[in-house]
Length: 474
Image 1: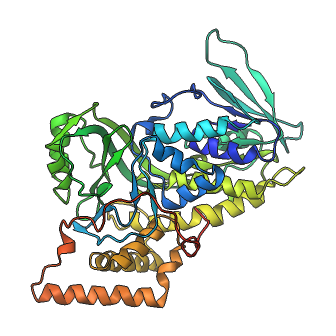
Image 2 (image 1 turned 180 degrees about the vertical axis):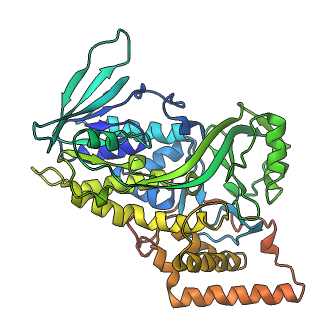
Image 3 (image 1 turned 120 degrees about the horizontal axis):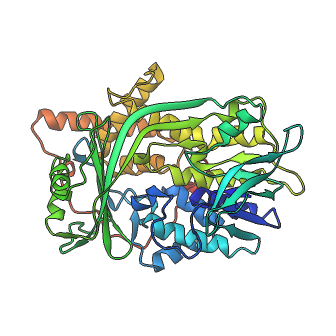
């Protein structure tokens, strides 16, 4: 039984269907046949990025799904070669790196994943049902089912649905920590970091194309200007804009105010493009005050027959687009723990999930978040070293596409974080930093720091070579 039918729940159901005769997905929303934003999924109105590693994991679970999505009108390109990245107001030099972008809106992506999951003979849905709590054995050592209640039509009484395994994929609002305490288990330790993020999303029809062959224009927030945006082509021949601010500096939702906000970004590209665009809907806001990680791997007791996945374990800073990729990789971790005739052991699953899926991106983005002076947290020597090196990499990437490609392979979670610690790469970074410093002293101007045309026109997405697939985690 999977609690929650969003992306993480669908991925979990996909791998469970290989091991169980019946897999039931329970959710408060109507799911089957829905193609637009869902009531209980506010993120479905905003940009949701699937990183390159997430695309590979999705394709592994649903062979052929990427091409199906592209055939449905979803544009694509390369994360390093066809996305116009700006860091500290300077554009990274583009370089095609075999990192497939799936520029689908959240409803479009969810529609395809849900359709493929629903086609599995073992999978069924219990829609418009509230999840009330767990059912356990008398000694509370094993979860044996879930209490649910219908939300449709006449209010009925609660119903017990028995299950050999329950997977909580209900997101950040998961009640598993409360349920565990009610059953006499320790409360899971929660790690939070206040980032004060707020963002606004709007869709447009372009009258003129500002992309010059690129897929997206992404000025990234920096400590000197904690405002950023993603301005990407998406399905339906539309453009999707999500612009954001950190530490309480949030974009407005009135049209004139939003245009003024976009004009304040580090580069003029998006504001100029909006002068030739027609809004298709009203601006919609979302607030994200804190990141959240629940350390289930640290619990010394946990009931059998219950696991947790997706945002119900860790809610990353949405700016880094790691959530759906972590959900996909979490499903692959779950698959590794599904042995014929045996229920997964929670301690082993949570250990592997933390080590292989959550730790790498959590530690990487923690260092980035802490570059903003207003974000509270411990800035250890290791964090400061990581921040210094990241700044050098970003400086070098303005001048060298190979550095951009390596950087985006790490950000896309295809390479392990230590891939950028190789001596040859460090030497390349330092050489370009020195070159940039000399050029600045001589008064030279590097065109890559401004607005060059894309390196190439966007190709049909290509898959990384086997050498590219260095990491399977998160």
